[in-house]
Image (cartoon, rainbow, N blue to C red):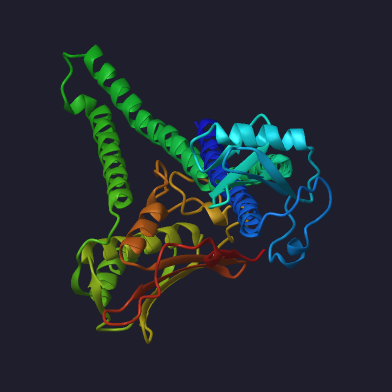
Length: 428
């Protein structure tokens, strides 16, 4: 699919460039043709403006030296009332009297006062006077040669330009479609991971129900283990489906949903309090510093979920006897949440991917990744932050790992936006 898209991209670019070059070169050639044609007519008009003189088959008339146009190969003939050739005026063109008579005969046979004699390679212009008819002729061989040379040059330049732009298009196609290719690969990986995550609880549920069906005479109490296991796997699958639906809605939501004024401080406390017994069981101490009355426009439930995801992630990777600190403060234009935990740092090769969906690594697994975790926690945290026009960053060093969320305050310039990879730094 990506190859077809790349070929289509190159084909469209080449077609557009070919059309533009064709129009430009055609305009240049036509403009040159019009200019040469006008110059030949000006030369013929000037030679017709002079009085006829004696027959001259060679030489340059003196009046031509005063012509304000570039030299042009022209000559004129004068015919009396009976149509007899009386004089020939030449300019930069040597013709015989027979050739001049033949040109005059062909011009007289045409009813138009101006036109072209293709067989002789001449352009003519007639002027009637009381003494007779004067006909000027201009040689078009130089004009045809100039146009042919211009067309040949345009074709060569156009072919070279098309070849050069083809190479440029190859580079542009690879560069422009790189995000599409990456998104395509991420989508394929996402579908594969989602299928795998859904397959696991379904397999367990089917296995448990098969065991239950093999002994239908036994009581429910005697099969409680399999029933509870089935219920736990079903709950896990429901949670996974809810997470997938949330991410799908976040992807489809182009503009942030309308929010109400809420207290981020209250949302932070609501997320923090349930984790104190969890941290105690894991041997982790939690320190908190929550500034009161931090108000902003948002969804209280989503922001509470965001804080809970970061706290859960910090408690899991703080290690036995580790420490977790949760801090909420108001800045001049932003509200900032920082969740810091001790423990092993996230390796640099894993740090750029921790917000990817279903990302897994031994020391950099996403939030909600306990036993049977889905790997969607930090991806959901990132989606919530983006919906609130904020920024989520991660830094990791031997001293610990810090997740920082910045959210714009109402009435303040919004400096948030989508999560930037530049926010993620790791110090080994």
